[in-house]
Image (cartoon, rainbow, N blue to C red; front, side):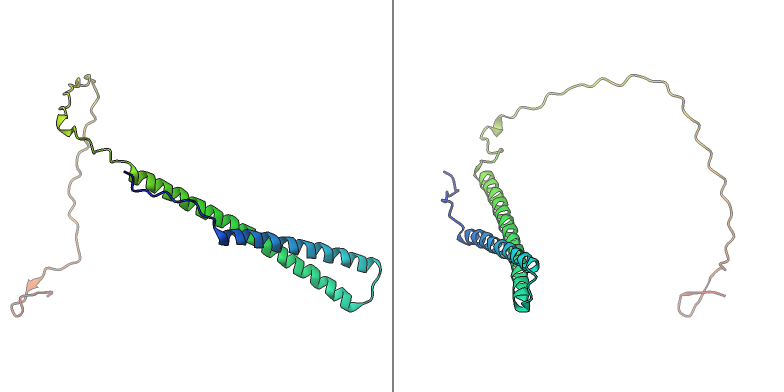
Length: 162
């Protein structure tokens, strides 16, 4: 009997809302940006002189561009969330599959193990090689040091320098 429980996949409502909102915001931003830019082009071609209308059209284009950017970022976030959820589902499925399989060593016929066969290996063929003479060790050299001999101190049994 398997310990794994099967669960019906449920809809991820927040992720669906994220997708819908991201696409709606991107669509609204695109519509405002294109409409504002077209109205600005008409305003310039007609040589309009209403400063309030000019600022209103610039604001519409700016807000449209910002909403379009926010919608595209929302789509990227939704895609990343889907990728993260998919990776977690794959890892979880692999863990469940590994946990439900019986271990490979659970064989009841372990008492019937045969001893391995002894195989004799042929000795390697004799090859003549020229052996190099080992270099002679150099003579030890007496190195003079600046250290003076240490005389023992009778008072505290520690050596002192003369």
